[in-house]
Length: 277
Image (cartoon, rainbow, N blue to C red; front, side):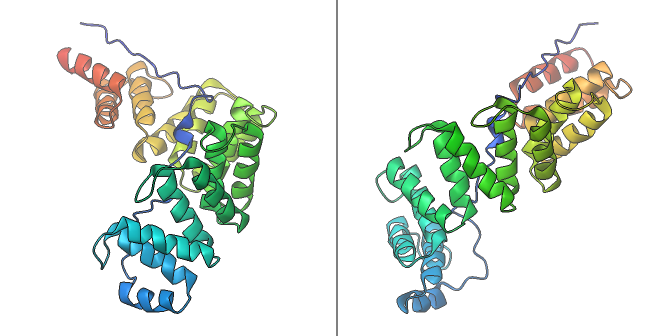
């Protein structure tokens, strides 16, 4: 029988930047929002209505798509004091949608939103400082912004702050603290944090090594669409780590990982298939 090459994905906590879970999409579903009533309210000086109307034009919800018009409305909302409008406009400048791409201007808009405690703005500004996008790279400022969002109840901020503690970027490295933040974030539905915590339990990083707990967390991450969680479960069942060895289950998890575009998952699935499993 052929030996299946199990290339275990050694995703260290310093490289788990799937931790930067996608922020609130600008093209969200706006079902229930009446574009016409927002027109009237916006014209009457309601900044929030201008922001919502900008969303309608961005995503063609009740009106013909017009991203330039959306950017004008977000600007009007931001000028009127709506932090959400500042954040939306910042995202347009960050991606260069409807306006000329300008990450410096985007970061200023994210800061304006963050200063009003609009936490998506704080998260995006924290990411900008982490990568040096429109601002000078500064891990300390990045971690400070993630702390603000985490303490404000945003689970993604806790995940990113956990990464900072795991890597020592902007804070003193502390894996125990990182795991506490991952647990908070995982319990609040952020599956990337579940994966990071699974890795900690699997390797005994800051916690007592516990493969059974790791497997349960890998499953949560896999069910949430984290390809590495599915791949690692394939490895778990192939090698019998904390479970009874089960090749069909291993193949199924490798297949799921492959479906999520995990190349090693595709390789192992193919090898098991060729071996008659």
